[in-house]
Image 1 (cartoon, one colour):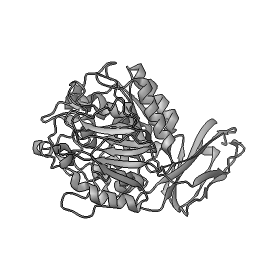
Image 2 (cartoon, rainbow, N blue to C red):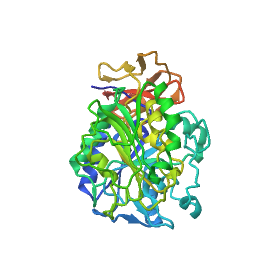
Image 3 (cartoon, rainbow, N blue to C red):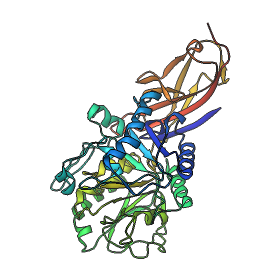
Length: 445
């Protein structure tokens, strides 16, 4: 029994999926997402939080109930060598009561440490993952997958994260969240033909980042993606694959047919986009309801500081092959107060090549045998590094050998799962993987 080859930049075996043990809907959504995305069971961690958690928690509560037990689970399960990001299910607090307040993602990014007050207030904290360019700069860094960034940063690598959905006040329904997650899965490998729209006006929320638009349009044009700058929100019959604006209240968001294609990111840089305990201003959950696959907004008044919000380059990062989580993470210079909402692994511009596992076709074995990853290449895609995971844990670390040896003498009798991952050449080291189940029938002495 095997899993068809699937492609990503950040892969499902590289995320820690967190659920609230005392919330049935948190567990259900996490498990359904794990099934949709083939997240290994060992990567799902259940944490002890109230069934209906408050909107905010203290830094100490974050450390005690989320950070410490999650890190302990990583160590005890032996998966720390390949976890690159965390994904939160629903029913988690979203705001940290530090001074100034941080988002759940901000404190996760900093590994539970609190930043200097000014870094947060003025947006002067500089994420080591930010790809730029900054104001006054003409060029940023190349788009990169998180494994490449992790190789560069080592122990200084932060922990990017994203939330699958929010169901509290001004939140989404379970059906809306699951529709968003399914759209993310559906987006993979589609290489969509829709349009990205940059909506302009004289609002400071827009003016603070209009300088970003021209170079991004140039990049997107080179990538073959249609981009429009307009002062009107679109109703696009041909499909919308991205939307960026700056406005407190989005007109007609609940009725306008945006026609978002699977994998679309939509966002409107406003102070209360993720301040769900206030009814003021359009919430980012409205973009999810309108059909977007991801959105982002701050959990506290941030002022109109462009560094605290996604850079327009988020769209060209995505078109370079990054997942939504990677694209948003590399597009935000100061991600300390932002909440990222939606489907993290959506990857519309992921590789079209496939991988086949050779050597386990009979589904069982009783003696040593080689297992090989065979690439069926498309679009001249080249893969030169391979990883083998047995039951979700590293069997053979990333290297240039497409073959491993399975020895029943080292395995328990009964069923096992082997996942083989191949990494594409490039700074966005997109990956394809396949998975197969097998059984060890005879235990060799």
